Length: 440
Image 1 (spheres, one colour):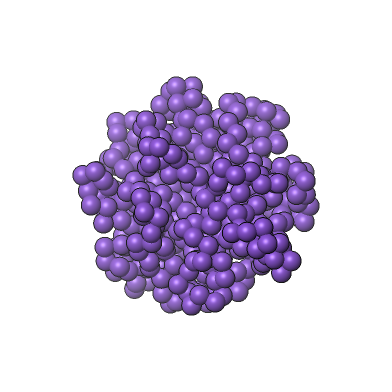
Image 2 (cartoon, one colour; image 1 turned 90 degrees about the vertical axis):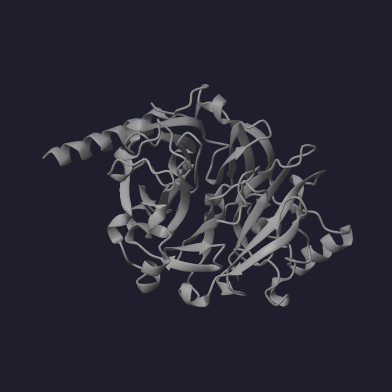
């Protein structure tokens, strides 16, 4: 009876949140740039026209999905975006946003160069095929997760490509073994980088990378110093059919995607970061973290200790080992695509159904009563597919959000005469009212 009453209370809170969120709410994010259609920098105008004529560049096919910012150079900052090759007609999949304005927005320059990604079907898997998400770590390295696929067609095995941001040179590659994938089904779309010996005191060599397989739901863990990876599966990574329909600004589509979003708890738990209400036990480990994750077609958030994920022996024997180590910690009002956690343990995530960015203090139970809507805008926050916490040159953390109006892509209603893609940002202290917690 008590459990039934608690469920009813949570549903009531969800309903109240739905009713409370109007067209605009909370602190509005600051616009950084926007596109009507992704536009690229080609070597010459003639090459651009040739790409358009041949179908190598189809503007309406190019969907920016994620971004990251390089603050390492004191003289200039650089903004990078990914444009996955969902279909043909995408000339480059990873680019740097230039200062040159094109007809539909700022031009995107191929990064680190055009040759490495222009024609992936002919480069013998030494280039970059298709990138959903990237991450620049504390050691000034960009980690690129290459799916190896164009649409449903596998061109190459997926790989991690690491680029030194000081030189823009590739310094490391790791190809995911075929036996850690599910035939042609696997699609690796997100990554978390866990540097366990960051600079300036560490060597940056002890790095783990967690990768999300969205279509054959699983996680792949890469151990950089050992040069090996392993696959992990759990039922919490799978989509929920009850949440496979997405409605954004009165447009609906169905998408049964599994594990997509991941975030790590702060590296060293502080006095105000205690995990007893989330993971079910009291613990303050100095060398362990919680990895939060969820499937796209789901409203449930889950958590697992990273020390569990690091035990390769267990997972190589059984990819479904330790099923109870992956724990659901609660539900949110709607589906969410991306999420990121700041150094104080505040989890930021986009609520797809509300065109909003929400925040949850991880020292509290995960439920709508403890979720705060920090920004809502029915026009500018449609489908936040990229969410990053980035530390600027002064040491302040910033929230960066890329929105892509993905419902327009899925329903075929994308209009390249309208603004479709936006990158917005705000400093964390500002959006939280200069408090360290987003506790309601």
